[in-house]
Length: 194
Image (tube, rainbow, N blue to C red):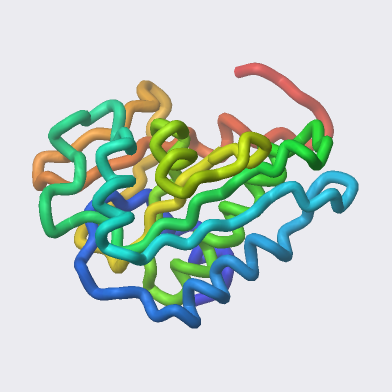
């Protein structure tokens, strides 16, 4: 599958099998985050990989899943992520666009993971205090995004749809993600509202 097709197929997954992700794959995933472009090459991000079952069990309750379908689409017992990569911002690095850097790094990592069959969910809705205390982070290191990873136990689909942004379960119970049609969001040489 080429990169375009891979990106088109990527959907957020919240239900995972419990097959562990190999350590060398996790290392490669993080490496693609490390290598992502960042503003002024300041490199404010740090990457905390969590695979220990006890630590994962302490992180899981601090996460908020699928806001439009909460709590019905939260991972059930046995569907939790098998790994987390927590993106940390080093506030000693005075980067005005650290959140942009974080988004680019997370995109690189999710595509790298998907190319190896590993699904992901980017979570901004979490309790950073739990992460800070659990890992005894210094006050200048801020948890900014939790990337939940695992082999998928669901196959969400996207549909072209303009009337809603809310993802939903279709009649077959499949998580369905509406995306605006390309014609509504792409302009060539001029911007014109329809």
